[in-house]
Length: 247
Ligand SMILES: Nc1ncnc2c1ncn2[C@@H]1O[C@H](COP(=O)(O)OP(=O)(O)OP(=O)(O)O)[C@@H](O)[C@H]1O
Image (tube, rainbow, N blue to C red):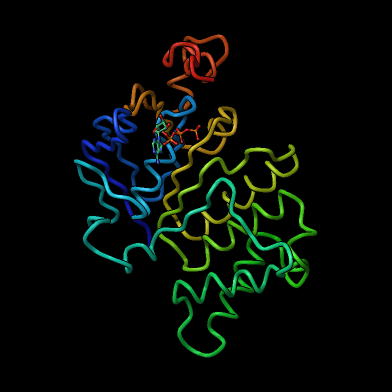
């Protein structure tokens, strides 16, 4: 199953700060969309709203045509989230942590079902051999992949990835890219990825949107956006966001 994301005139204010200022954005079913923006542009705020952890002050967000505020847990099971820094207990094994996530989210109703999902998700992210080792011994890339396995447990139709490659070495970045490409090919999942890694967005995403001060200031295919800029997408980003003044 795959689902489209529609964000229409969404506002979210924190006191005087307007984190999202009338955001309109659509991610087509099965597309990979890269949301790039300056620090504080509103990316994490948007993810919290889509995942149903927070509510917009105005506007509407639908996933698969259903309002994320009204449809409760069933729609949220369709959305997998990889937070930038998933906190995992270092003394637990990967399997114990995934079992906890499956339990909390009610994944796997029949006997053996959750265990099967856990083994499948671990294999998908290349952690089958490490799944019974304590997470304290995992590298950053392995912890990120464990976070991805947790997000994949429910076989989501939509994946939200917040800075998935931040802090990873080039091998870790390549491994994550390979996994995401495979998951997309196999499941047709819709992917929305917030990132500062512009070259990665160029490689992975069908479309890229530039978020600045809570609004989308440009979007398109990465090569179209990059056209006319010596530094490709990076040059386009700098000129669109005023040189990254908050960085
Ligand atoms: N809980 C909060 N209370 C007050 N202000 C907040 C809160 N959450 C976010 N903000 C503000 O809203 C704006 C958008 O923040 P957000 O974290 O969504 O941006 P971001 O694009 O994810 O940034 P980064 O790239 O640094 O992670 C910022 O000005 C931030 O300071």
